[in-house]
Image (cartoon, rainbow, N blue to C red; front, side):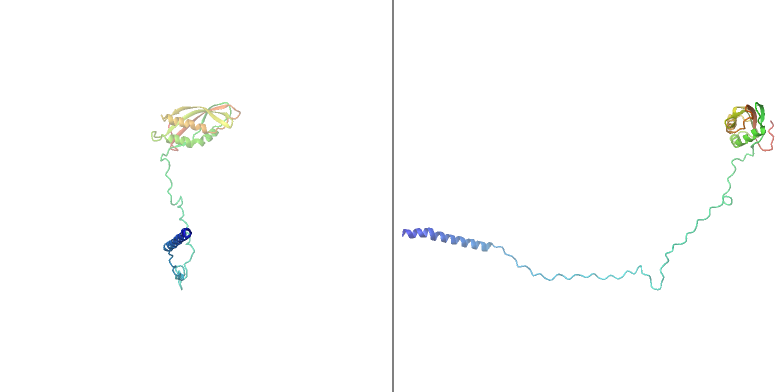
Amino acid sequence: MSDRSSLIRWLVIPGVSLGVLILSAALSYWLTRPVHDAPLPVGPPPAEERPTAQPPDTRGAPTPGLSPPSATPPPVRPPPAFPSARSEVPAPPPTSGNPRRVVEVEPVIEATSGRIHAEDIRAAIQAVTPLVQQCFEDAAQRNRGPQTVKLRFTVEAGREGGVMSAGELVSSTIPDPFVQACALDSLLDVRFPAPYGGGKATVVYPFEFRVPGEETGR
């Protein structure tokens, strides 16, 4: 009797407990299993839309019966000719309305240690006559009538012909030191002939500012 009780205790009870445990686990798994929805049936893909045909662009096409415009550029017209300086453009007025001019006079050779001609001195001074003319015109409004500035200077031989030295004022009808100095400085630009045989010459030259043909009354 005790053996049967021991058998029930060690075999039947554990077996029943194990079976209940397995049954509980199976029931729990069945209740908590994931539910998968049935996949929807896959239908056919949508039909591909075909692009609508565009009407042809007829903007650049020539119109029937009309010729296309010419691509040749219009001719280039030359600019009008510049007016002639003689016919269209008036000549500029003279720089001064004063009729007085620096006239040509003969120089006076006071002394010389060589040979030099008065005509050569006069021709050399004529090269600076425009400069002396400007000297007189700067004071012409303040000094009316014929005017004379007389200078004395020395011409001696230099490297390139004769050169002026020792210039001085002898007399002047214009009491303007600027005009006197301007006329004297103009002689520094003169290329005088050198006296023949060396030496030097003392020359007196009067610059006369007057109307040609008018006497100065010196």
